[in-house]
Image (cartoon, rainbow, N blue to C red; front, top):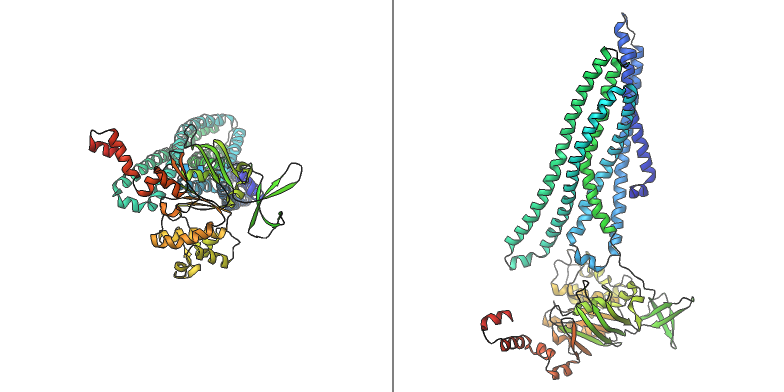
Length: 627
């Protein structure tokens, strides 16, 4: 309701006025019927030469009142369509804007399909509620109150009968609607679940085919589809039996009122006339039908509440906190004095505002240090133990180790995708918690193992690294990554449209574009997470020279399984189970004949195998499997 009032307060108020006028027109029509019967039809029946002038006038008046009601109904229905669409636009805007502020952890723990369901299925339930259910609920409520007030004025005795039957209606409605609401809530959850599963399948079809996993994939879908079917069937079962039940109770009420009212009118009890009986029967319909309509709308309300609960759960998610105050600015340096500038000069500086109103600047050098860092994705489960890394400006630091050793986790901590549990991370001597996250990440170019390209031209995807980059700078970055050659062979060159995360390009070509995107950003420090994992050996040699130029003068963190790509690293860190077990350059680590030596020579698995067999010489084949 806050969204509705906030988006179109004036239109919403006008809609309410139209609803009130429409309701007043319908109720006053019932009062006209009493006047029509008692003051015109009965007297005319007793006259020998009836004059119908008065009857025609009152009929024209009734018609005019009903026409006004019809026009107001048409107006408020049209207005509510505009209100609903505007409200949903605001909700979608707020959802998407808030989603951009959420931490990476949220996307790691929620399926993409379920998140998509918030923007489609859940918002659609709100659309139906705002444009259809809400105005009808308001109109019906006003109609019920107005009709009952007039019925009470006409006959307290007949009104008492209406009250008794209405209590029965409410009890039945509460029971059935309660069940329906519960299952509609489950239905929306099951719908989000199945959307997540469906969204996952197209991207993983190759894996499904390779491992002949089609039966299991079908079984998984059938299970989720059955769950959705069962929840939807139960929800709609209760929703569909509600209206017929209430309708029959309304018919019983109509018959009882006709019998009792006729008896009172014939015996002239309580001042009830034939006109009052006819008007009362009309009012009883005006009273019971809205209650039935309200009950019918309860299923839509239940779905809307379930959708709203999911939507506002996303909007209420805690955003990524940022307590930093140090920012990254473009600067110039003259005689050791750093000055901030609006133009990009290739020189960056950290801007420190102080409590006394002064500001100091520190030239960014790329000195990054991790001091005794502990971290766990879940509380009580530490995955990094006492990690210390010292990257001096311009150094190339490589991380190697088996899968799950903690290599990528370290880089996620440097750019604060996650916050550490203990220890310190300093960037040019500044605790990274004091640096604004956006500025910290702007200073760290990153090329991920999983390349993602956006819908747009090749040029747009390269420029994503720095939106103010010129075409010439984007082309230079592509040449640096050795992507220029294959780009020019595309149908429209740099203006070739890419869709579906780069469908039509090879994995290696997509990786080259990601490298070019990082190159055009021209960051002071780089993180390369398996940046050449999808490039063949020949292309790797071409890229490596470009990468060496890109890394020159920059502090670079490299994660690689191809140890040939990190031989020229200044320092190589060997990780195992979240701990740094070896560190040094390539030559010194080879001389140690330790874990790095075995990884480099391919003897690591053989070493583990021999160690296992040596420890357990019996049951040879069984132990070979376990090792």
